[in-house]
Length: 79
Image (cartoon, rainbow, N blue to C red; front, side):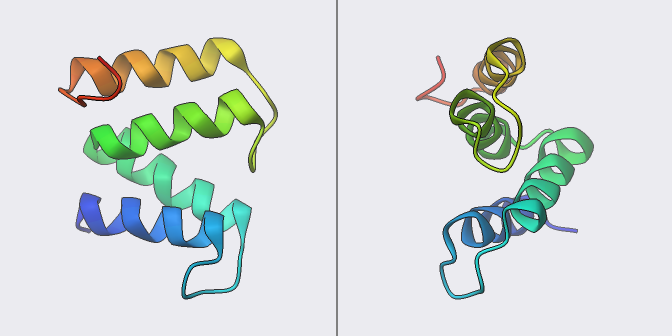
């Protein structure tokens, strides 16, 4: 699968943009893009999800890991 498409789908499901809002599905797509394809945007978005407790339990440690992973992959906002 295309990691950019997975990331965009994840964001759409999290926000209910063009699809019915489904936090679980959104997180699933983001996790696949981040873990299987090392997509920096997905890592960054997951960091925010863990920071805010959006679709997942709040977890500052995991948020920081995701932000660091995004930065390591060149994500400008995470750096």
